[in-house]
Every structure is written in structure tokens, then in C-alpha cells.
Image 1: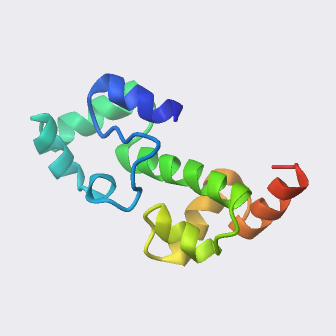
Image 2: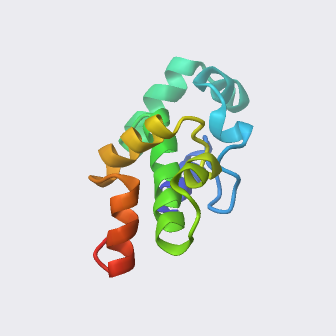
Length: 118
């Protein structure tokens, strides 16, 4: 939620927390985002990284993984359903991104969150 507010303040690639994570807005290529912001792709990418401290793809992945953490901790959805709901078509890629950002696999995160340790 904090990240999307920062991006919204900048006027790019913002996605509200209740948005559908698998929607085209979260899947737009940088060139398409740049067109919507009336900037070149390079200019958008540089400015986004400078202002946000991360690239657009990393930003989108963080937003998605934040929501995945919430879903894993508070729902009984299967991990594959969580992945799909937050916009990942491939469970293996979702699991890699999740582990890279959270430090553990989604199932282990869920178990720890339910024990109160995540």
C-alpha cells in the first residue's frame, strides 16, 4: 500500500490496493505505461527508478507479493490460486519471486504467518 501511494504521487503506474492484480494495468509493458504518461520508455524507467528506488517491474512484483502475503496469511486459497489472483500465470515464477522478496517459499510463509511468526 505504501508503494502504490508513492507511485500515485509521481503519476505513474499506480495501482490501488483493491485493484485486480491480474488486470492489464498491472501487465502493461513499460512502453505502454510510458505512452499513457506521455513519456519515452527510457525517461519513465529512469525517473521511476530515481524516485521510487526500484524499477517498474520490481515495483509491480512487490505490490503483487504484498497482496500474496496477505492472502496467504488470511485465506485458505491454494498457493496456485493466490499466484493467479495476484497476476502470476506461472506458479514456478511466482514462487521464485516470492522467495526472493520474502525469504521463504509461499507454503512456509503461510504456516509461519498462521503460527504468528511471519
